[in-house]
Length: 170
Image (cartoon, rainbow, N blue to C red):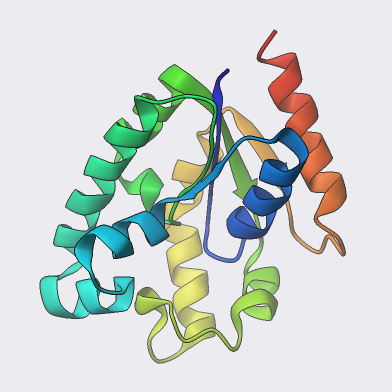
């Protein structure tokens, strides 16, 4: 059974949808950021602050390779997983990669009070717009996309992903 790999910008719904998909499919949910934190023994914020973004991306790459070698799991990635195209290529070999698209207003609404986002220090709105714009082409290049902007409930989105999975995993 192939993996379902959720990619997308922070606040796009990867964690929420990952939990729902896990419940509905019976496949275990693996949250990459949580796995990296557990292995490193510190939070992502601390990894960024103490070791730098490059070190975090190396840990992320290692985790992507490991998870892509297994199957039958729901994988919720970090928002920057698309920065290294090898991550996506590896995930596509063993799973359905679904990019959750989201607009800046929706992101801001969803993460307004979240202080655990290391790339959003200072002016959250400006950072969201800047990061979203710089990564847009990377998200858009993923074959399977689902827009989560302004959706009042995650259930229909989860069903859309399951339908996509079933039609691509005969």
